[in-house]
Each structure stands twice: as C-alpha cells, then as structure tokens.
Length: 171
Image 1 (tube, rainbow, N blue to C red):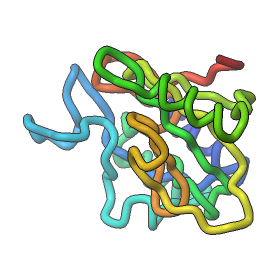
Image 2: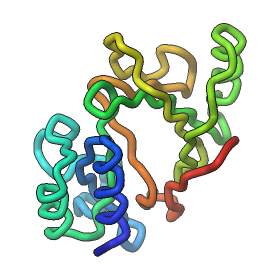
Image 3: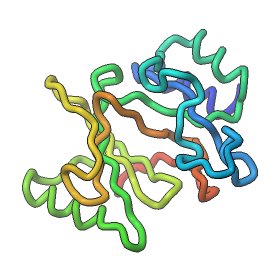
Image 4: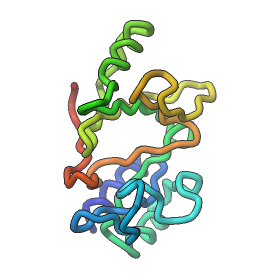
C-alpha cells in the first residue's frame, strides 16, 4: 500500500470524503501539461470533489491506477470540515488577514493544522450546521475558506515546491 493510499483510507475511515488529484513527479505535475496552472492540486477524474468518496473499495481502485496521486479532501457538509487556508510568503498578506479576522471573531482553534508545501497553512474546523460556500479572498487577502463546493490537498501530498503537506500539532 502506498503512503497516499494509506492516508486516503485513513481519512475516509474518519468520515472525510477523498478523491485523487494529480501528483508531482520530478518537479512536474502528473497531468503532463508543461504549463499546468495548478500543479499537484487539480482533480484526476471528472467531477473532482463531487465524486469524493469514503468507500475503501473505490479509493483503492483510484490509487491502483496511479499510486503517486496526491490526496484531496472534499470540504463542507460531506466531510464535516471547514478549512481556513492561510497563504504566507513574500508579497502575501495571509498572516495579517488572519490577525484581522481573529480580532473580529476571536482566536481560531489550532488543534488541527496542516502546513502546506507552499509555506502557508490550513486550519481545520468542524463544519457548522449551516450552509457555507467556499470562497477565495472574501474574508481577507490571501485568506480562503474551503467549505461546501471546495476541497483541500492533504498530507502527505507533494507540492510543486518539492515539500510535502504535513500535519502540525499546533501553530
């Protein structure tokens, strides 16, 4: 069993719906497009997050075709997850936007955090019992919400930077 398959099955056993996204091999997206605009982050199969599954048989089938797939978790009601995606780095304002948001609503829990391969982080939260759509930049610059209609790339997936997504105990 490959690492990504093992993780995908573990996520599904926790009630998170997963699906394969293209991986990164030798610094390139496995989609084969030299000018790929979302390397290592876009769905392998038509339907993307809409076909995400918690079914081990289906997950094994997807990863048997290409064991180097990255893993995506469908966010929102289907998995019970709302994820705040904070982009950090030069010329990115995610950290300042997060501080501004927390000044308004209070500190967000940091119990479940993923360090992204691109240098930012994802804060995993329980999806509230109300519809929340995914959005980009709506709550702050370089601060995205992944909820209904969205997904996140999950550990141990590889980022185009060559670094892996990793679970962090706290930030």
